Length: 154
Image 1 (cartoon, one colour):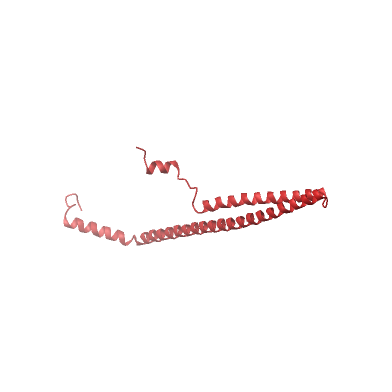
Image 2: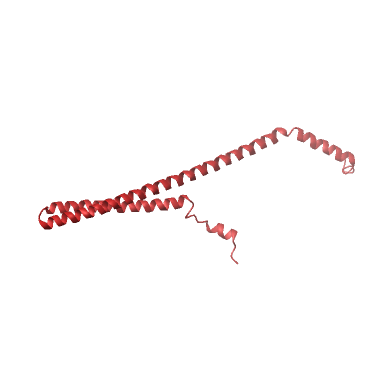
């Protein structure tokens, strides 16, 4: 094939045969590339599924914690109310002379412990509510670079 015969019918035929011959010996590499792409797709799908499972687990754990913490805070609130009444009864008995000051002080101590436990339970309940909000996708903020690149200021 010379430069003068470059665009003749014979030249295109021989170029086609060369291309065909090259492709005949290239199937192994093409099949390997296809297998590699399929493997990458399967890997990405597995990573996506794992992310979804973790997110679902986070939401489930956060909701369970929220329900349990709220129930605990409610129970402790009822106990605190009962201990407040018991402390008042103890103080009235002390004023009438039927109970000692030690009994009143013991009732005060028990009431303060219950109040502290209730406050801690309410704090944990609030933290569980925040964890639930975050697990459901709340609190996410895109970075400034994402905002400026997608929505340029005018």
